[in-house]
Length: 237
Image 1 (tube, one colour):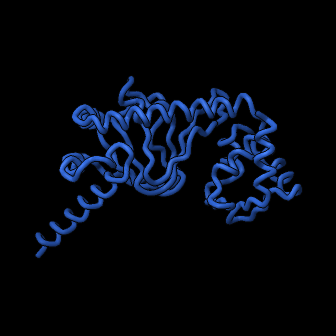
Image 2 (cartoon, rainbow, N blue to C red):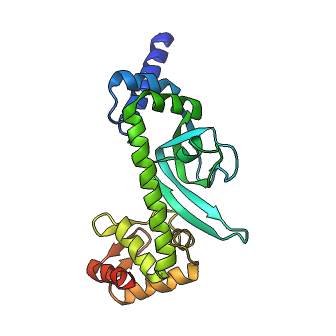
Image 3 (tube, rainbow, N blue to C red):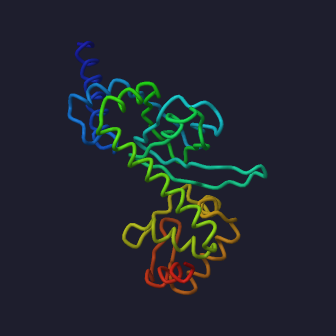
């Protein structure tokens, strides 16, 4: 009886891995036979909010894929100021670049909400990539997307003032006209995301509220005047 129960658990876990793989950009075009070859190499790791998954400059052994939870990718200056490069959620991945370069973590990765991550070691990932033109093409597209994202971030920080960066973030993050205020989305975190300090975030959000552009409470930020927020960004370009 125990053997049957154990077999069922293992079968369910394998099916969950297959389903997860089939939705990732690297593997979504593979057939079941190809996915079955990759699936056993995925290892599930669980992390709690506040945990550090990776430290910048330390050795990287493979790629992580986010099954559940939220994480942030950050760089920290010598004076301790933190800049958030990206927020990661279900279906996202990180440390891909290090696999194909120097095997060193390029940034810190911190868990914002309890997370489950699948890990694929660098050697296995390289082998699967080399065995499939589909995966190779997807890798090129993903890398190109990351380069564009970093170029956009550089442009945001150098060419737009803080008010415009906040307006841009609001518009990009809104689902419909609403942004869920997750527990970790404090003014400190938002300051790190847009590259400023909490006092400035507080002032700009207050000005947006007074101008009738947004309103917010503990649960959400609501966009009231999307056109005016968009115009602010255009005026800064």
